[in-house]
Length: 168
Image (cartoon, rainbow, N blue to C red; front, side, top):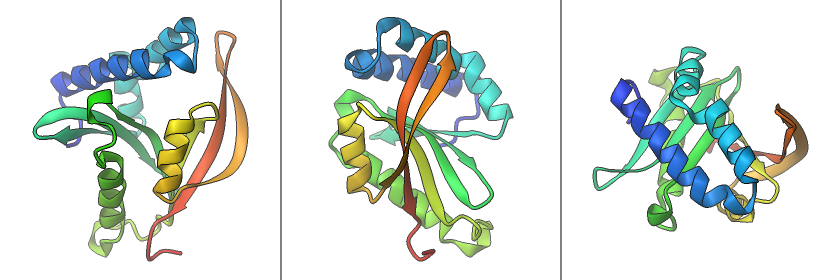
């Protein structure tokens, strides 16, 4: 479900705080988590990203907010900026269903996405759980990057790609 209302933005912000505080505590310092949440996942940041063309989706399971995704359509690929699932909904196939749904959308010529050939994302190199999930979904590592995100913090990431089926 696309995020369009103020209430939905607030729900995504709350989900982000829930996921990041619980999941990233073993990957980033508390200070870096707080900095990144404010910079990338606060209500203000979400609105700015949406005004810049990023599209947020709420991922639902039995009408409950199970997570969220954020994408940006580029010239020939879909940048998956965020794909987060709350702890209680993990290992239920939601990431696979989400990626499969995106494949289906991009394989409908009438929607005008025939130029999109692949999905691209970044994942923290220490995030072995997410890396394994993405590899299971067909993503492959194409390079490593160290990105200065400000305030003295560095994200050490893999860039991963996955061709959209029937586009290779």
